[in-house]
Image (tube, rainbow, N blue to C red; front, side, top):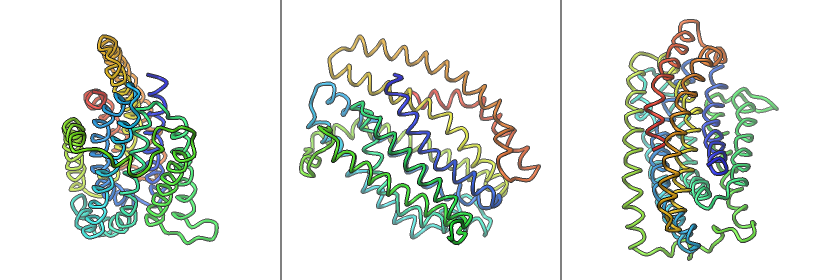
Length: 364
């Protein structure tokens, strides 16, 4: 679990780290800027959670094929993921470009927040379809248990985002200060770099299971497509519903004002960082169990499932304690007013007690 789970945790931390960097740096510009980025990112949040569920369900097939030594099967699952993810990403991009102000307005009535969020969304949405392809490689790398290079590439993309955020948000190294637009451009460039490096790695790595022609990736038949969707769609639907409910709650905070929306955005990012550990346990367990089922060793798979449940219970206690301890130091990082800062501390502490039911669901 550690060998597979820790790189997965690293990948999730890196992915969430992009949002964390945005909120920390943009937080220096004011609460309305944080609220705008948070509102705009709700579309990506719902979209990415749907992909997470879809790819998690499909990866069960990939891990079983890998456990049975069937690389053709692994590649066909990869192709199914890529086709669905890219197509969905293209649709969400078109929707974001056309309806950006209306989508942001679902979460805030503040004209300044709507304007800033729409600009941010229209830029960052250009990377949605490409991000889906990066997710395909990253998620299925877990199924074949080859995560080291992928995690390093993810870390490289985070570094690119960090540097460009600093340069473009605040206007350093001769560049103009672009604020939230700079953060959106930095995110797009980082995601393009990430996908490029992942594709080069797969192509150049010796005997990589994903190194295949387009015909091999798209060589899946209707029967396999239906079997993968039969498992993947219920998982994707569950994640989608949960993300929609979360987005509705975010919108409810928006009705309380820009400060409440900014506090909620920061709290969500902080709790998502801790949730990475649970994503790691859940995904690692799925890969291990899938491999053992592919090897026809159901007794071992059942034993590993029981160990995973115990691990989740331990993590629940640890996550609650960590959130309680870091609430005030985290609030001090942002340039919020005294009232908003105190509200942020109290909100993080509330999330400390809610993390057990939330993360138990994630791990399952």
